[in-house]
Image (cartoon, rainbow, N blue to C red; front, side):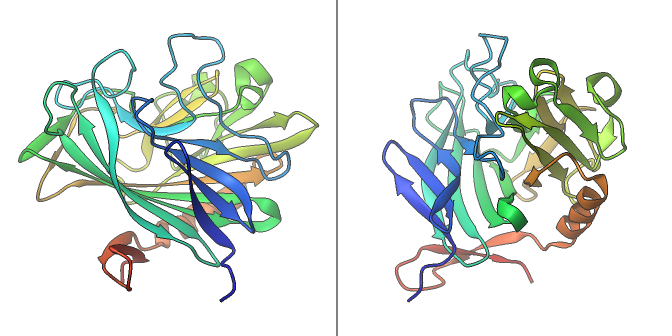
Length: 304
């Protein structure tokens, strides 16, 4: 049987490598050495260097900025954003490792624990699908569902949450001369912070003269779409679901969020980004399928 193009390789120290044609594109980390899981690196298509970084280039109290991750500052009053509280997000189990010629899909179940009660406040199913694009580009599609353990749970009003991206130092506006652009055509933190947009892009020049960037898409089905954005000139961007106010989720109606990251060559092509956004909005969501084949507990497929 021929090896699929897109594969997942579990590694020591609680890591999983996403690979295309045998070469790594992305890595998932879920060790309890860290307060919450994260993705690092996400490699650029021309430089082969990470488009994201660990930590803030100029703020030593921002160790919680680990590349690409999920968190939220106010979960029923508990801070799951900073490293300075007892709150932790832990991977409880992996649900699916699914290789394929067009994409590799990782599905995991996470628990959000306040650090004092052994019962988690909520459970998060995270499905991450990596697809190769043209000329070594990469698409990372994220589908996640938050289910509270109580009947209801409030995510409080905050800029901080849920899906966070810290770009590489040289891609940032302040530290590296990169450009932050929104789908509206606005550029820079002052023009974009708190404003609504369908997508956000950070592009710049990596060492060796390689121009590339990362576009972050908010799906049309997400609550409040198009999202208000928390962005910074220092290399930070996040679609802020609770920017304007709190959101309540329930056991019967869990919160579902969908995002797409595109690691692209060259500077931002706004027309191409708009086309990708339209294509992404049309994609059906993923769903878990129980015991689809022998030796598997779950599979992942598009809903029909």
